[in-house]
View 1: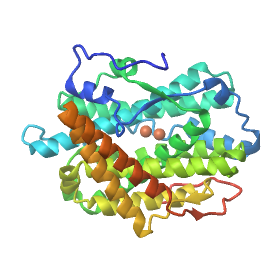
View 2: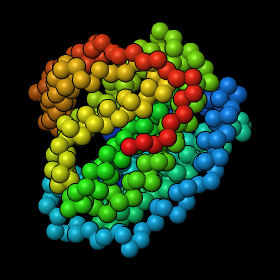
View 3: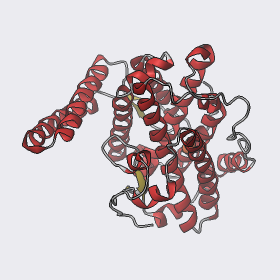
Length: 359
Ligand SMILES: [Fe+2]
Ligand SMILES: [Fe+2]
């Protein structure tokens, strides 16, 4: 796999595959890293918890879960409101890309590694993400808009992250993935009339896979206290918290019809996902974003407005578009900085990080 593959022109692939291949600021990315450094991790300091987690993954609790059953109600793609259809497709493609991104990274680590602990873990995680991506792709294929995953692997641009950044970013995306899936699932349990697609029925057991993946990264970070305790790394953790949360906010707010159909208020939903993720992340991060500070919501809104303008300037193109992009870009940067500067809350991190899904 080439670490710096540029996006190639899409020949003979459908529109959803092309969409999934794009890498803008908001699209889920594909990552590559220093696999040799990752391979050198020694899990001895967390051996007891590590072995328990690996045994759970080895037992493969979701082995038969990702199959369509009679619970899979038919979806009327033909007669769906066009705006909703567009946003539901966008949600599925974006989720598929995120799932598959994990699959590609984990599989590559397994392939390149020699460390039996690391290889076994990444093998199970790649297995799970391949199932998740495959299941979403089945749903897209029903609408004749399946994504060509082989093409995506070759065409998508890969972003290089040092292993410690992979831990912060991937830990957070696994835990946020859990929080997102379980929050939607619990909401639709109470309001089945809003279940616009059968895939949501599969989210409960699905999100337990994401929870376990997050646990694995929490343990990996625990093998080296510097990763979460040094002054510089705390600044990085703060950066990733703000970045991952704010990208989620902007992305969700770009899908108003989808959330309306689900009966979900986007602000409330996002706040709830931030809350759950922050509570979970206390297992390993010594700081958390103060999501109840009034500056937080205001800053997110400023960032969203600036990024929406940046996107329309990009579409417009030409000189006007260029200047529009520059000014909106500067506004986005300022809004991001204002979010980053909000004083964080401090946590006393427990000795043993392990948690079980509780929502
Ligand atoms: Fe997944
Ligand atoms: Fe995952």
